[in-house]
Amino acid sequence: MKVTVANEVIEGLKDAGVKFASFLPDSWLRPIYSRLVEDPHFTTIPVSNEGVGVGLCCGAWLGGMKAVMLMENTGVRMACDQLARLGISVGLPCFMIIPYRGDFGDGQSYAVAHGQTMLPVLDALRIPYHIVRDENHIRQSIRRCVKTLSVTNYHVAMIMGAEVCVENL
Amino acid sequence: MERIDCLKALVPHIKDQLVIVTLGRTALEWAEVCPREGNMFNSGMGNHIPVALGLAKALPHRQIILLDSDGSVLMLLPALTTLGSFPAPNLKVFVFDNEAYEGTGGQPSDTARVADIAAMAKGAGVEEAMTVRDLNSFKAAARDALTKDGMTFIVAKIELSKGRPPRKDVGHKEGLLQFVRYVEKTENVTILHKEHN
Image (tube, rainbow over all chains, first blue to last red; front, side, top):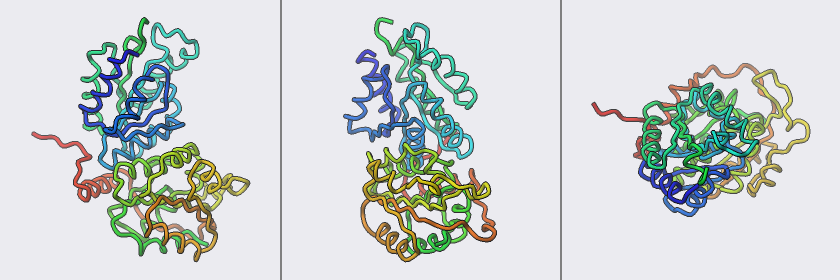
């Protein structure tokens, strides 16, 4: 990922009022994680299970803090139960930023499953998503996603396509 | 010891804390002995530690109490490593461990066999984790937890409940809104969307 893309994500989160972040690191969003940990603007808690991160973000929301969970699209499968219970049964929302592993041009065979299952799983969980494929659209997408979460009181995902995550795709 | 007696022992210490409560009979009994706006019921089995920790991080000046259960903690054990790695001094965790899935007929949980939640929490970095097995010990531990600074993690070994559960409505959506409005009011924050016509 280019440094400029990571900048757009960090500044986009700040512009949208997000102050709490959780993540389970993946390789495509790598430049973002250190920025979140080092920037005192954010309260950042890395996790070892994406379901825990989703719960943390929902808890932060309950305390009035806008939050974001960054995770590879495998994390959507891992956090299925937490997303379903917290979102549908309880009414606590989580904003997610997800790299589109398994997108067209991803050269890793392990990512095939991630790409093929991500959208059907998000649809099954009724989670609206916005796929960003241009670096110049990142800030606006974050702002729109955070607004939609607020209006619907439900999870929203911003999916970052391979074009914005991988240099020399 | 019985869970209801433990919960009653907590009531004198409750002032303006935010209390996250697990599902099942724990929720019904807490709603019976301590009904209030600052209770949040059933964030979903397994989710209580993450939700309570996230809330504690968002409001570090506010005491957050979690009333959890063995089945719920066992469902999402990685939450313990997060709790140990990123402790919140304002978070007071109580795990009522009756070694069973009481709501589905009392089938034994793994804590009836070999699992030790306090030991797992300690291994995950929750240094304060402890187990109490009688009411006097619970009362002393709870008093210390709720009157002193620092995160606490108390596993209370309890018996299976006796008799019929209290008939209390811990309705989800209405309860969530009540809790959120209470946080908005007492913290002077905006959580729910406002539309301006």
